Image 1 (tube, one colour):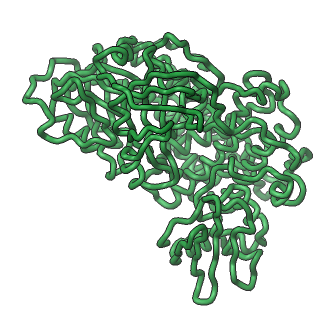
Image 2 (cartoon, helix red, strand yellow):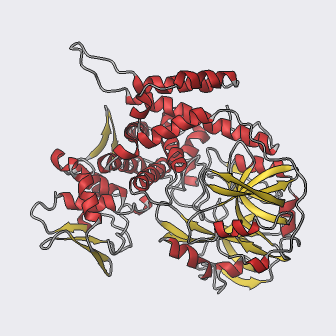
Image 3 (cartoon, rainbow, N blue to C red):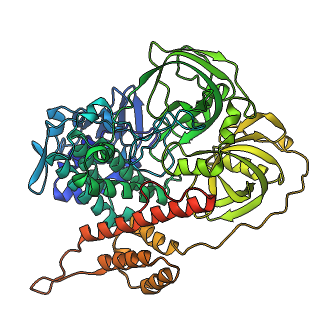
Length: 639
């Protein structure tokens, strides 16, 4: 298409696909592919697609997104129950679920007057009292401005350097008034969500077409209207990742899809039996509550570009106060690589200051009437006043205290919640090749650390900057990186000292190093080669990823699962071997009816086996990561 389609609310897509006849549903994926090749033009808030010489399709998005089925109109003879409207909604990006209307009329558009599963139902009168704040328990890179939520609230100590205001989800006053146990509507919605996500897992990305995607979006809408916005957001993330995989988008990562699926299935599995604070955390929140924080004196740290597979781009600038607490100012909106590159030169949206994100990362900010979200995001209300103030170099007070925190303590904090940032002193030693590309090798307090780029899109300078830094072995630098849980010490490089000027720093995703910026030849220090001995957990992780990508059937084929299980047991991972056996068994076993015909596979059993294996690999990865960094292995939630 010549222009990008406006985002469409999940409930709209679900309603339009639900209204198709079985015959048209079979043709929906072909209709989406055909529609993507047709020319489209934008006229104000309306996007028009020429379906053929005589038929036009219109999408009206007065608020930037399509929030009702009536806003998609088609001129063909079968309208309004035509294939074109459903195909357009399925081809468009997914709008923020918070934009959906929560009225009875909007809810009724999904199959009559109630959202049902089995004998239970979720009525339209249910309201979402706990709004959406990102993914619950997600371990992927955050979409900054709303840091990734955690499985349980955890308030950061004001005296701990490098901590955000609050790590995780802090229940709001409305959430505190929620029942101590899940309601019948919420249990029904979580069951419907589990079934829809299990169907996507069973089919894999190749088989999860527009119909299965719409079923998951329908479940997400049902979860949101009965007060489960956290799992609704995670379900939307799964659909976005599936679409990215099916369209071969460069930003797609199989690990992100696996994490999102694990999050949806795990949360849906836990909600019916959860109570108290655990249930409040699983419900999630949809809007970041901003609370007054008086006057603030902030010092710019660095800026990073944001470019996600969900169609959002921009920049976020990290700042710190004199006590080392972190605050963020973000500018993230629908867009592509061009917006990610240019957002750093946009003015920050705080008070009346004219500072750009790039300038703020090297300057300071004096604020009065500040409002702050639990994740440290600064509000931009009318009462907020902000003016430019002197900044501080990384090696000057008060920012130097961020690098004084022991590395093991920083890693423990990153693994148990928060922003995952690490403030490290490293000495560059060389490079090493990984599956995703070359990584910098660096010595960090005796640890051999791998530093990778946070994003590999060619429009962003991550790869070029790492390549130049690799040409300066022996250089000692202060860096800011985000922890990448792995059996070996590994992190994503976000910012670094200037190689020739300790008083300046470079934002690795925004600034471009030049050969002239590198120091002269330096003799690298002698050190041990990076370790290569790893527990064979990849034997189980590979099957988990294969199932998420290719579906249940890929594990039903006979293979060397028995040999893999024995190898895991010999390495002391007997539990992993049992999980692998159950995963293959649940994928392959089929029973027959009294007439000898094969009955459908037990998708529920396979989903539970996959969830157990995915959760096991996540927890072992966390433990191995903590051990590699010398951090505390007793992590909350590890079992």
